[in-house]
Length: 95
Image 1 (cartoon, rainbow, N blue to C red):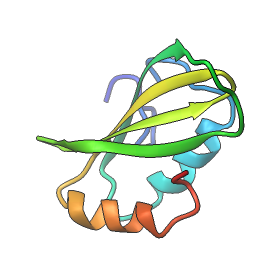
Image 2 (cartoon, one colour):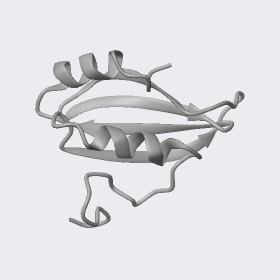
Image 3 (spheres, rainbow, N blue to C red):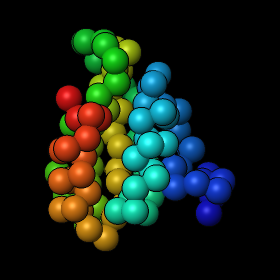
Image 4 (cartoon, rainbow, N blue to C red):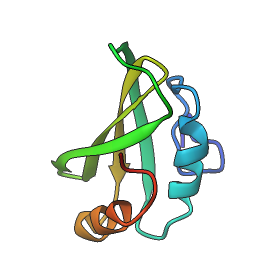
């Protein structure tokens, strides 16, 4: 697939600092079929990267990643959004 290489993460856009490490760990989960990072925008606050799930989409979940004075949309492609949401909620990645 274009921009994916051999993994589940699409590399068309850049990522905020520290987010790639988090997404690489989440990409190993069976619930995740793909991860698409969106555009990076400037934020008022910085800090270490953390995720917040926004809502379910037709193909999975949309989350917002914050960190390093930036905000980035992240789309998780999954057939089981409820299971992924539950696993994210019990992980250390949401903040």
